[in-house]
Amino acid sequence: MRNLSHWIRSLVLVFLSTGLFQAAWADRFADIQSRGVIRIGVPLDVPPFGSQNVNRQAEGFDIDMANMVGKAMGVKVELTQITGANRIPFLLTDKVDIVISVMGLTPERAKQIMFTAPYANTSLAVYGPKNIAVKSAADLGKYKVAAAKGTTQEIALSVANPSADIMRTEDDATAAAAYLSGQAQLFSTNSIVAVDLAKRNPNKEFDLKFNIRQSPAHMGVKMGEHNLVRWLDSFIFYNTMNTELEKLHQKWLGRGMDPMQPL
Image (tube, rainbow, N blue to C red):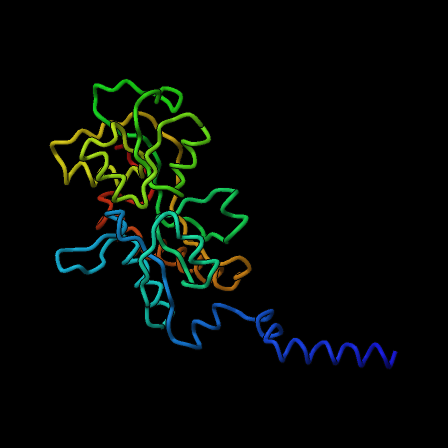
């Protein structure tokens, strides 16, 4: 028994000396409050959720959400630009504390990070000119469809039709540019993004070809950060009840929270 007690004390000393003990008991929510700064990954390539205005300042639904989170937590907000492909890697490597980037939940992603309750209701679909007859992923055939790599829509299309000609771009803005310039005949994106692009580009057709699936937007945090997820869930619930999220929907998406209105 004496030897066991000595072994346990020695093990604790090793944990303390290497920092493993502190890491095991670390709490991201407490850390954020302690340092007074929350690092949030946001998109700048997916208007109206995130983009840069004429003064090169970040703006959009997710930008406002990030600032609301910081204000409610009582800490300074440090924004980091992310893309669909690096959202999860930035969480896993501790470059950000939270991702607010119109991110859809999938079982595969949920193996890597934790998701909050949804804060916006959207869907994913494929768009293109009216004269292209495509009604499902199986009909894509020879048509090239632009989609940002690592996004839910790109992954879903790859699974639905492994032989599809998908132009995988670094971000959503590049995918949109590929469609607008004619490099791709079709474009796969979020329904709200498509509506915004159609308004900005009235000479380009954004005819709905087929829906991929409903894809509500969730915030993401590193696996195991239960206190942070619970606080963010409370934040979403509270701001749903006091209509602040409804105001954000009306401001940036041009519609109410629920039910989702058709395009």
